[in-house]
Length: 183
Length: 183
DNA sequence: TAAAACGTTAAATATATTTTTAATAAACTT
DNA sequence: AAGTTTATTAAAAATATATTTAACGTTTTA
Image 1 (cartoon, each protein chain N blue to C red):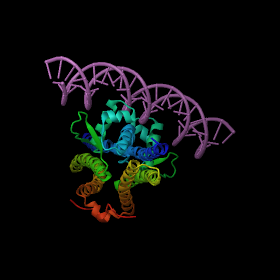
Image 2 (spheres, each protein chain N blue to C red):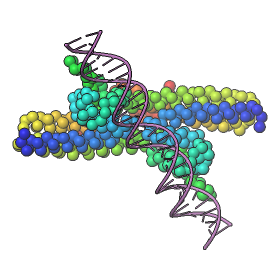
Image 3 (tube, rainbow over the protein chains, first blue to last red):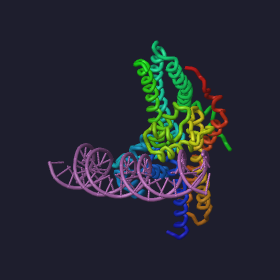
Image 4 (cartoon, helix red, strand yellow):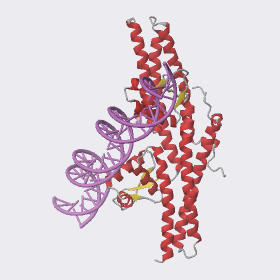
């Protein structure tokens, strides 16, 4: 291989590494460990990888790769691919960031809405009991009402978050914010 | 204090605790530690708190409270409040979830766009060099082009994310997804 | 059916993060 | 200005998380 060929190859690798570094660094937002982030970023430039290729590429143990892949699968950033003939499992990075965005945030936001709304409903029932209780002092009733109203108010946000999730899932948000707007 | 008054007080506390638990549990999404999450959720039902009140309420050390508060301030979930007369610093939880949403996600997404776009631009420059290099083999040029195109494609997403941030910041998104939609 | 290949689980180790106690610095009071 | 109160920083301890090595179970293949 000639010198200039060698240099070009290295330059391509450098270019990839710059992007790999940036992707990995910003992936803490997705709640993954740095090594899972590194793995995803590495896979982003590959067609597909086996666990052994991952461990070679990142110089880490196989169980570690296994764990990272699973975590990435949970948030749909990596998918298992079927490769005829090979006994080794193969995995591919989700390269469509819109899809990753959708799966990750919708999943998280739905969880947030569900948990909090359930707690709010229960809490409001309790507070209504207190308000209705004839023996309650005016001070206590006022307190209970204050918290009831605060919770009621907060529901607006959770409803909105649900609507946001729905509009992302359905794709309707792209009518409002097109994907291909040039700039 | 009568028995029923006592029971009502407790019921109110229970109601609050249910919500506190739920909020704290879903706050991992915002990348804060469980104790910061707990603190925020506790403050959510208080007007304002001093560091000493926090440590009493959560039964933790003052430096720990100090750290948690700072972290929460960074993502604008807690604001310092001025209290005339008191030498102690007072802090209040941001109770408007729309505002927290805006500050947190816009901050994070902007960081993501900035870092990745910078890396992409640099990488693309390198790749163009390789493509232009007269001595490059067709195989290398093809490779460089492939990565260049992949990066170019991904910019669509970052532009979109930027638009999303802008529409949240400007409030335009609420024309598309109103806050007060009833259901 | 025995051996090999592969992926996962379990236990142990290493590393990083959180939390505390102790020390320091800053701000206020008298 | 000296003493007190408050918040922060630094160092140490405790805890939690990530990673590895070793063991296990399953599937394949010879």
